[in-house]
Image (cartoon, rainbow, N blue to C red):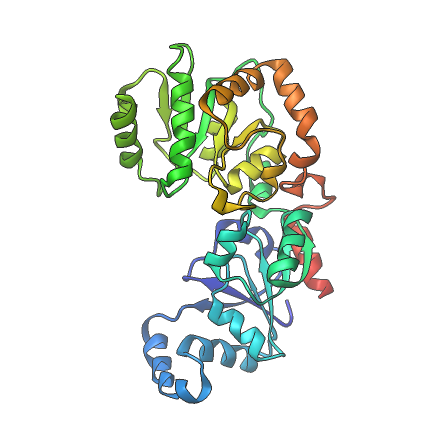
Length: 344
């Protein structure tokens, strides 16, 4: 597309971004620099005291000028150095496509400050972006959700659940996820007929989880009739396993946003006051996000029943549909992104 340059972060084009990249012709730029280009442009760092630009920034600017482009698009979140260029040079615009649910701490970690246009997964996320880091924002839906609905049967038969709880494991095994796992394990161990599936990610430290279960519950997850976990990973393993469970438990996760918006029963856990609105609009779900064990048990039992599930959906429909608005939009996110870029 004329005027646009797609920035490939870490020299890897993310699978989901191909959904819209293949629909139009884009110019590409790969950063950070590697190999010969890195060593050649590294020489320009001697000008840093004068220009206040490093070699990657200079390379990006030269490409924009020589290739007659004025807008950078990215699906990977852009570094602060790239955002600084947009602030410093008025001709340069940045379009950031949202690749996951954002909350306050994540925005701070990503250093999101100077985004010209944010293409978001929901109205809630658009408003959040406008409040904190974006000049303009538009709802286009989620590319990863588009990928799911194109490749996975997202509806499930409630009479054929294999697990009582699917636990979404984050990459880092932090305090909040340990508490959520503690609740989930405690629940299934109350009855030998209950079961738990640990939906791990490829980078999840399963040994760390196994040690926690052994130390705190005397449970060997590798050899326990009530516990299963992901052993082979695909692009769809998380949702395919989640669909087999009555309730999906986890903490501040894009997957929870997606599964909730697709009509599945999610129970997010958020235990720390320091997070404030860290869980975004997950906090608006009519459920206690920091439950004591007894209340968690009671709620899981309730929403595991047919009537309980119906009440949960009825009570939370307005919130769930706004977690990720992909299914509410007339067109697929990839088409919405192209349309938005054409109108810029």
